[in-house]
Every structure is written in C-alpha cells, then in structure tokens.
Amino acid sequence: MRVLITGHLGYVGPWMIRAFKEAGHHVTGLDVGYFRECVEELDGFTPPDRERVRDVRDVSAADLEDVEAIVHLAALSNDPLGHIDPALTHAINTEASLRLAGLAKSAGIRRFVFASSCSIYGGVGDKGAPADEQATMDPLSAYARSKVDTEAGLAALADRDFEPVFMRNATAFGVSPRMRFDLVVQNLIGWGFTTGVIRVLSDGTPWRPIVHIADMARACVAAVTAPAATVAGQAFNVGRDDNNFRIREIAETVVGKLPSVRLEITGEAGADPRSYRVSFAKAASALPGFQAEWTLDRGCDEIIEWLRAGHLREHDFQSRFFVRLKQLQHLMAERFVDEEIRVRAPA
Image (cartoon, rainbow, N blue to C red; front, side, top):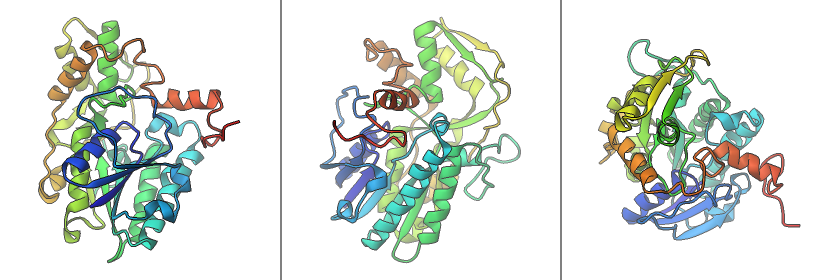
C-alpha cells in the first residue's frame, strides 16, 4: 500500500517509517522540517521512499496523488507549545488536519489514521474505572482541545468512502533518532542522569499512561491495514494497561535504575489537574495483530543505555535539540519562521 505519513521528521516519524516499510508498504513523508536538524543517527532507521517538504497548512491535491492511506502525525505536539498561541495550535492541529482530510476524501483516499491523544481525558484521574473510549472527555489544554475538535470534525466526514481512525496515544517514551526530553519518562531520566537529582514539582500523584513510540507505530500499521468493519470511524486508546503510573511511580522506577540519584517530591507547583488512567483493552482485542510490547522498565533501560553511549555529546538534554518548544522559539528568534511559524522565504 502507498502510505503518506505527515510529520515524519518528528520524534515518532522514524519509527513510523520503519514499521510501515518493514510491513512492505511504500512510504511518502510530508513535513515542513522544523525539527530536521534535531537528529541523532541510529542504525536500523531508513528514510521514506519519497519526501515532500510542505507545511501541513499548505497541502494540495497534488501532494496526495498516488496515496492510498494517510497516517497524520503532524501537529504542534504538546501542552507547552499551546502556550505560544492557542489559536495557532487550533489552526495547525485542527483546521489544517480537517482541510487535509477533506482533500483526502475528495481524492478517494479511504483510510485516514489520526494521531490523537489520551490527554483528551484530562481530569478523569483515579475516580472510578480507567477511561475507555466511551469515557467523558475533559481536555485541559489547547493541545488536548485540538485533538477533541479534530476527532469531531473527522467523524462528521466519515461515510462508506472515508474511514477515519482515531489513535488516542498515551504519553510517548523511548529512544528515537529525533530524541525528545520534554516528555515525562525521558525528562525524569535526563535530570537524574545528568544532575543526580530528580525533582518532581507536583505532589507526584497525577496518573499518566505511557506508550513506547515503537508500539504507537505498530498500532498505526494495524489501523491502516485492518478491515473497515473493524476500525472505520472508531477510536482506540494505544498503550498497555500496566503502563498506567502515577508520576511518583515513574520517578521511583528511574531511581531504581540509577541508584545514586536522589528523588525530591517538592509539591511546589501544586496539584496537576491533568490526571487520567486509561483502559487499553479495546486495541489489544480489536486491532488485528497488535499488542503493545514495551514496559516502563524496558524503556528506562533503553533510554539510560542511549545516554551512557554518549549520544548527548556536547548538547544539554534541555537544549533546543531535545525540547520542541525551545526549537520553535529558536526558529522564531533567528527569523527562520514568522509569527505563525511559517517558514520564511530566503532573502
């Protein structure tokens, strides 16, 4: 199958490309390139068969020629980016996504796999059973609201000829050629490894489900290739039931891996309202051939091994190369992009 992956030059993209190519598919990547330079060479990752440099807001019908399915990753990717300008998050994450979906439907592309997020559950916390796909949504950030709005817009487009699938991914972790340390597992490991101290500014009680990016990629392959009756118009929480943790528990796991590290739960930032446990039973039973494989324990070992191998080199793990908000701020400050983070034409 000929698959278009948007946002392929991000953190998840290299795993997504590899998963689809290993499954025998032809892959086209489409990305504006904000994070192209945030790369660490790793063996085993290959580029897409074709690449289109394009802002997702500017995709045309011509970009969708010879495409049979779309995996839509491109987005302003987490809560801090929403603080730049919530309207910009809406324009890129929702408006551009729905415009792309409309073009895909007009082009006869049936399967549209959308990278949504478990953050849409927001404040579900530990009240009652873990949230399944029918649970009440409680988005508490511009990022989470953009995912809710996009799901609703895609659902309105769905019919017998257009099959959106909503992949509600848990918080991502794991090593990537475009590594990030602004995600909870990596961030805690980064602080512990480089300073010897992990400081949790909340009280440590909020729940976070986590998922390895390799499992995210495998779930998308299953969603693209599954029969329509199995997935069309449906949402799937992507992760493992035993990967629901309180922030304190993630930090304690890291300390167990780095025994010289000291853990401090300061509580100075107050309680974090974003707290949600999630059920992943549906994906495990209904996505053909998919089972999430990566545990927190295994993922911590992978990240620590990456750090011990010296991949940070001269870079601080809190530098723009590993923190998406800082990279966008750098592009703005250097005037590579304008106030709407559109790439400026060369002088």
